[in-house]
Length: 296
Image (tube, rainbow, N blue to C red; front, top):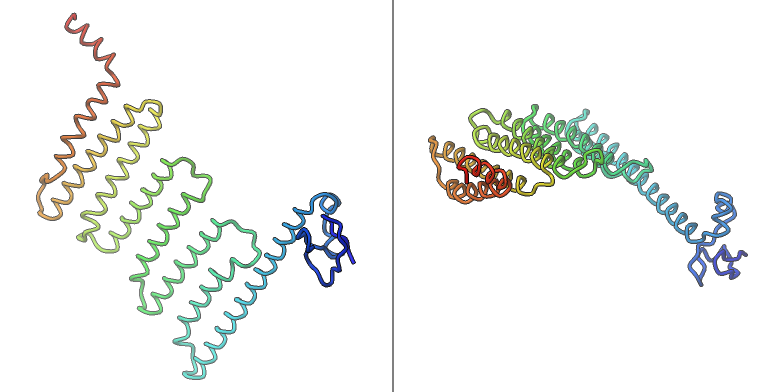
């Protein structure tokens, strides 16, 4: 029999694991020996949380070993069936590497590795890239569709890295990293498709233009962080350039000629707005210059 550390009621620890009055966990003698004097004396809530976490980790550890044992059993079964049918390992390779992928991406996180979420994201990215490349080699004897799948997975990893990686600080820097990664992604896709594809003639130039304008916008915003007139004017003029460039690239790709179809409407609105902001930001200097020039 033991007394509850929280309310003091006498409880039979062999029948009751939790106090029926205050829901405090009743510790065994070996569990009490693992705790400090302060925890046993004055912090029953923390003890309860600690015991719950310990039980949760134990359940996750058991789950990981069950999944691992089941996966290894499935691999051995596939190998035996394949050898018994054709006396060699042939068709079973694809399901075997799929089961190995399951072990590394699903069973592994249940184990007690004490790793961060970003570590698992990076590890799963590497495993998935290797899996799809091997799968493509086994099916087609060459790397074809897996090239684009691998590039997409790596691009997604960069996006997630900009979110989870604490070393990359600032929204503008993260956005610039994502745009640069997207530009590299489009470049490699273009190299895979050929120089005459739509990616090389349309997607790659547009992506490069977006990246350059994003870098220019970042530099201006960082330099004139306290001057909203300059920031808005920079964004306005960069938007005008982007619309103009996209319009020219699309018309050149579709009709093989440099013409403007819709971007001039955007320019008619944004250019006067940009000039007004630049004037309003430098109105005192402009007034002084006019007074000296025309002796007003």
